[in-house]
Length: 224
Image (cartoon, rainbow, N blue to C red; front, side, top):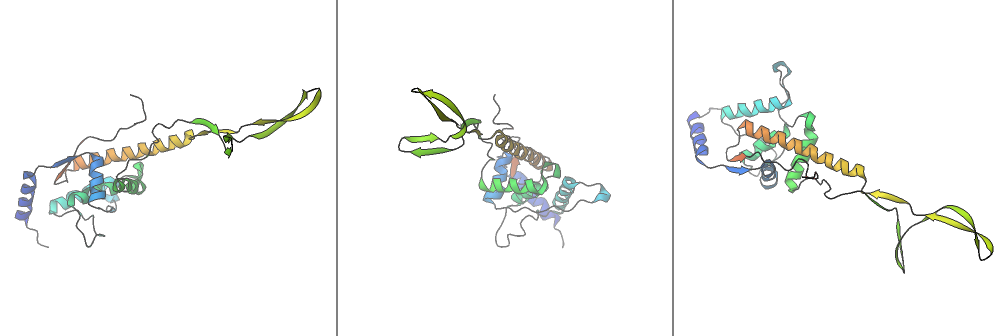
């Protein structure tokens, strides 16, 4: 295929003349996956002979395509629709998340959350509280269920009687481990967003968008 370098240069100059839209990395992700319906693509496998790792091979592929004046191939599954080239670049960077940050699993999670326009639930305000294991309702209202834990002989009205000793089983809800797991998952998502943000900023591949340094709070549950 013959490449028209003059045409490529004129497109670049026209792109430089337009003012870019500034977005945070989360806004950019939601725009790419929710508005533009970008799809994840697996980057080219790394070449061990060149000492390339997963992220390096992705960057290499993006640079090569930029040099050729081609748009990133991130929408091969969208045969009947158009995806903005910037959205495809964002999807390609997400697909290149390294294994240390969750790899493909995290890439899918980032894309799904962005497509839904939501932030991971870190269980705001959740504090373990002691509550009855089970509640029962009768005509007098709600009551905690009790169980027999023993018996005792007591003297009542001049007679010895055996009475049951009952206790209310309790538990802590929400479980502290559940809260910790939710906040650990949020932190992993946040670290992935930082990596994506840095890649988009340093890569310089976006034509009409500018990704800012703004990210969601690292630990929104922490006290100021």
